[in-house]
Length: 89
Image (cartoon, rainbow, N blue to C red):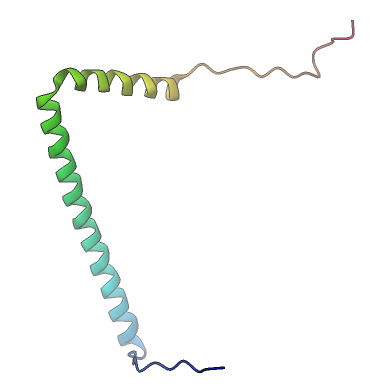
């Protein structure tokens, strides 16, 4: 079998743990910032679309409200237990 060797040297002890945590925090903050930028761009695009197409916005709102109403306040169906039915009579 061939051996795999790496020349990468990692810091040892508390310095390594601290630098890894700092890198993770920095990456998380960058991700949050990127997410905010995408959300801002999406908000602007939706606002521009709504300004240009107010009728479609009303239809989209009605459709969204209808779907949410069906999902959240839909009629509960009662399940019938077949054992309770006496079909042999």
